[in-house]
Image (cartoon, rainbow, N blue to C red; front, side):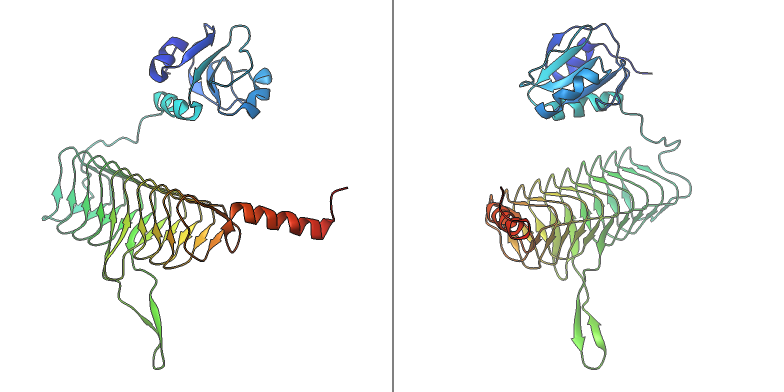
Length: 332
């Protein structure tokens, strides 16, 4: 079992210690559940009230915390408790699943594939013709990577993922279980003779560096060019990204949200859970789309949108307040 003193933990996060404790820390836990040997955190002043009933000996806290730690307890004050806790969680993270051999004997790897130094490929994987995989990438069991794909260095691809032909994934990426990269875009046209005719989707997907894609998410290939995810994008579970969409750098999409075809996101756009974005829509840099919202038109940079159909947040809040008055009557 790993064990750290408060001084050893603070060497990692470079905070300021308030109070003192001799208790060694063996794990992390939320305030309400923590024991004396576990470290927790307070990332917002509204959670200060839970400290008095918590058994945690140490908490990582923001600099604006106003309470005292108490006897044989301590705080480590930092500028951003959430970021500091991410460093502490790494200290206590269990080891990754073990590979007894770098390339499992049941993996099928085409003779034309180029496999970089230190690559690990698990049982039941299929690596197709002319695939290139960069050094130190880890591919867990039962992953399919089809013809002419490229995978960068130090990328992790979890079980069940399918990466279809001619798609390109950068370095330092994480693709979680059962994600599908490069499936056909959803393209059909009405035809009097045949009903609905499928439009061939002959493009691909290009994913930048440092991108994370959640479990069971889908990134469709372009119809005749590329669906693009810029560096640093973070995609949650169960997200749909339609064909020919283009995401700038460091975009965030929360669970169950979706982009229709040919949507353009600027840099740093945040899409809340279950939000949906109409096709051929552009959303400017730094815009925020609230959870459950439906965007039907372009959104300027920096705007926050709420509602269905989505409008500027302040207008949405006014509408909701008026609706509440109509239903419940004015405040007495």
